[in-house]
Amino acid sequence: MFNLNQKTPGEIEMIIAGRIREIRRRRKISQKRLSEKSGVSLGSLKRFEQRGEISLRSLIKIAIALGIEDELTALFEEVPFLSIEEIINGNY
Image 1 (tube, helix red, strand yellow):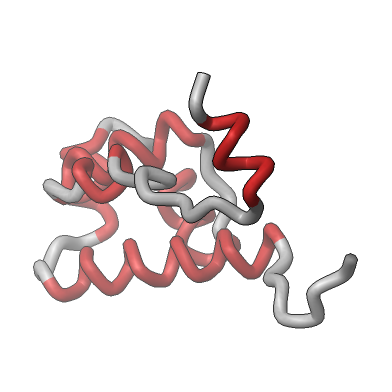
Image 2 (cartoon, one colour; image 1 turned 30 degrees about the horizontal axis):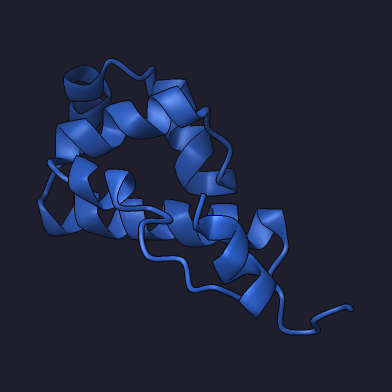
């Protein structure tokens, strides 16, 4: 079944990049400073903010540098069951 409202991977990447950029700006941290603080190259950080492209490891480093790593570790924490079968399979 195809969901017309389903976002593409590229759209999700851009949403995440936009949120990180907003947090960085809200905290008045330059790209250069965040690059230094996170250990992620300035080029990688710029590419992430412009195109959403980044490795998971670099995203984690940026989150730690911004003090928002708990949001990443909570990712997929409360995923709802989609069916009775899933509930049964989830009870090992």
